[in-house]
Length: 443
Image (tube, rainbow, N blue to C red; front, side):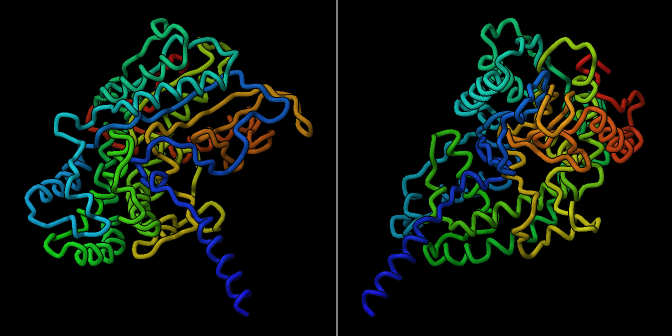
């Protein structure tokens, strides 16, 4: 009997030991770049397929801090920390706060970190290795903010042998550019940067309440708020891409379930801001999809690969335009907001911001020439998000989650019926608005 009990305990302990959790993969829009394999498909082209042209949309690399995150969550917490008399040495897992200092200053907000520069360079190397026969591109396009231009420059250095032969083309972030920019949301009055805040704040209260009570037990003299908790969890990500690690990432400070609460709060925010919960999202993302289709399928093209750098807002809207990571895809209903409840988590959701828009998140569209078993020889198109091949809705008649060029052209036309008409739907105040993205020269 004793032997049986000991054996059971050993098995149970082994099972618990097998569980692992990395907070850095659950930090939503401030997650350091990683490739989550969602879905876990082989990123290599299917047997018999060769990529002949590709286009990438890439978010900038890791920064010191987003100004909103800093001003709303991080700075109020660090200011309060400076002025407290709490003896942190007696506060258990929070004892590191007795000597901890913030890695962020006002002067560095929005600046690219060295880790960010390195990761952008490495992504450039990785992309060059994926397409060893491609000619070096003449141009790489980038929105004009310094964090995007520096990300593009580091990427170019990793991508090509002679970086001075590839031009970094700055694309204005002005509102008046309309759809003809890498920041089309800037010129769309129907888009609000604060969309989703009211909804996400509801779940924020839910998940932070027990954390606040636990921390008050550890440090009764410190008035923890829900925003303090968010700021501390954000510091896990920002400090890691500045200093290489952060004590805020410790699972003794925040449990895995508490990290999932942080992630879900952000998922709600992005769902209503740039996802399926915002009716304008697909309209903002469609111009890049349409321009990319024109570029890849053109009979003549100046480049083998087209790369563009932007901010966090654009990739999720392109994902909506593509119909990817849609919680409602197979439900038979068209109520995406019901899939993101505000008081409890939907653990089965497809829309997980940590996988959709970490720093350096990238969406790739590839044109391939294929002669594969079971398929007609010809040209096909596939989409990858952070190197993971994606299943396009009603466009999968090719090998390896690809679809034929004819099916892809039909798919883009149908998405245009759903999401086209930027000027009509955004209703900008300026008079020279355009519905198309023409920066690549193939429209």
